Length: 198
Image (cartoon, rainbow, N blue to C red; front, top):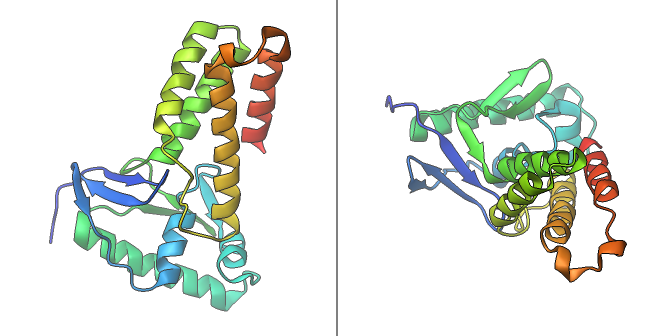
């Protein structure tokens, strides 16, 4: 079935949902590991994830030949499912790295991360009004914890990091909640950029 290429929109903050062309879709997951693998790849903290990290996150195993083959087979199967259901291949693979194809996939957590980074960079360079606008936009994008119903190493650490970023966003967008001397905005922006680079 050849469907037109649209954008696959994925909500990960405060819940999980998939949409194509503003229409909600229900993915057919072959098994729970396939769903967790897909959701792991949605982390905005890495553009792509190595097979080694995926193996350790999914099964707590080193990336030997067998686990790598299992992941590659699951990605191939998920690609077939998504192409059949949406007309979109959501993945890219380069060497032993796998990621989400951002030219056809939009993930709310990625947008939150991007807008937050831009807001703190503006703040760092002294453009406080533009920074406030970006950080308010980031606050609106954050609808809750990243993939609250999923658990593995990558997802859990992403959830914690994004939640901490959101707390920093809230502190920066609500300056009246703190006495001015207690907030060193430049230091807070530098700390956030350091956290995001880690």
